[in-house]
Amino acid sequence: MTDPQKDKPRFYGRRKGKPMRGGKMAAYNALMPMVEITLDDIAGDAPVDPRGFFEFPVEDVWLEIGFGDGKQLVHQALANPGVGFIGCEPFVNGVAAICRDMQEKDITNIRIFQNDARLFMPRLQAHSIGRCFLLNSDPWPKKRHHKRRFIQRETLDALHRLLATGAEFRMSSDHPDLADWQLHKTYFHPGFIWTAKSAADWRTRPADMPETRYQSKGQEQGRPTTFLNFVTVAGSE
Image (cartoon, rainbow, N blue to C red; front, side):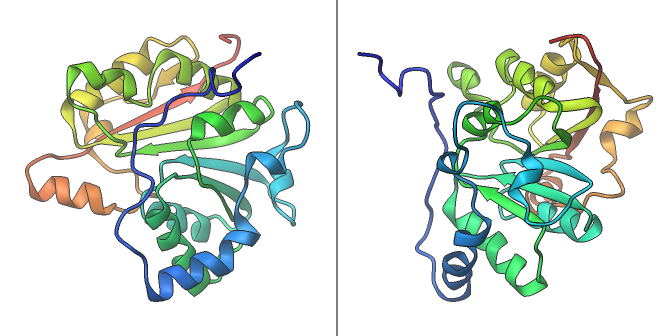
């Protein structure tokens, strides 16, 4: 008998933190039934168009992998009301935080996959995502844990299939070794082109992105954030 768990990626991050109370818990309970995407919602084996997760027309769909407390995702959703946003985040406390912000700011163009993004990405149609963010992901600094880092050849292959030609793929990290890892892996993948023209391009936060809590903390501790921006090219799948 085939083991259905055998081919699933192993998840190493946290799923729960401190007990939630008050507004976060109430917002989580109120919003998640309306905005959560689960694999059970995707019937059959055929890849789905992510626009179908929204009850209103959207001009594009953008994806954030590991959105933390959701501040960047909320900022983008407010700045781009015609875009549908999907955030993947297994950490329930972060999901509760974004639910509170969505409720307070009356945001309707965000959907949430509360699980590992690697389970979700294969279920979407090819070239159906217009932009992807991977910001301050876990650096897994020990060498024996490098295989746990999100950016690997396999995930870059999956992202290239998912992203439209010419789509932006943005990464950031305040961990120098992880930034080098992300740059090297993505730069030498034939489906992505690094857009940097000068050092300022990777030292300066893009104007349309807010400073996250992790970036601010890293700066205070002498770890400036590296910003990496790539675009996809066709014919490399």
